Amino acid sequence: MDLLVPPGSFLAAGPDLLDPNFLHAVVLIGQHGPNGAYGLVLNRVSPHTTDVVLDDSLALGRAKVPISLGGPVGLDTLQILHRAPERVEGGVEVCDGLWLGGEFESLGRYVESDPEGFQRDVRLFLGYSGWGAGQLEAELSAGTWLPAPPDAARVFEGDLKGLWRDVVRRLGDSTEGFDHQPPDPSWN
Image 1 (cartoon, rainbow, N blue to C red):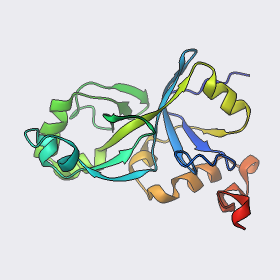
Image 2 (tube, one colour):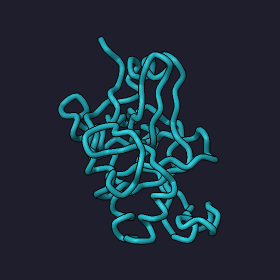
Image 3 (tube, rainbow, N blue to C red):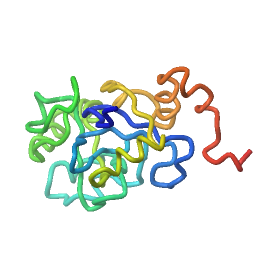
Image 4 (cartoon, rainbow, N blue to C red):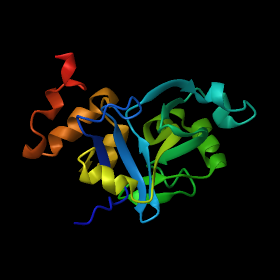
């Protein structure tokens, strides 16, 4: 069984994953290979905005763009996820219609020229989620994570609070009822 998760795929936290960093989290996989994996938690909002986190001499630092929490690793780094390759230069297409990374200066130009388009097409994250060699494969084997197919539109549209439940429901019969379970059965 191949346990490598293709880029752009979602990982929904299994119902037994009680780590507060990942409780009911949905992670977008950016890269997964023999040396480890990298991804971004899609459904963790933060109180931070670019005007507080970035220098105001930067165009993006003068904007008030919300920043999500991508994971517990590298909280001093800003990660970029977008669906506007014609506006945000650089980046790597992780699945059809979704790019990871990009040139910082082009982000500034985009937010200055079209703030509404920027908010619609770009998500920023503090930190990321990372796994060492073999770690994610072991967690997948144990059922800690539930892989789901890519859905680039869902990254930008819909209620983020309901994302975990939506992804779990899409997985079909094997996860029926998971979306109604409390994070910890002792909460019943």
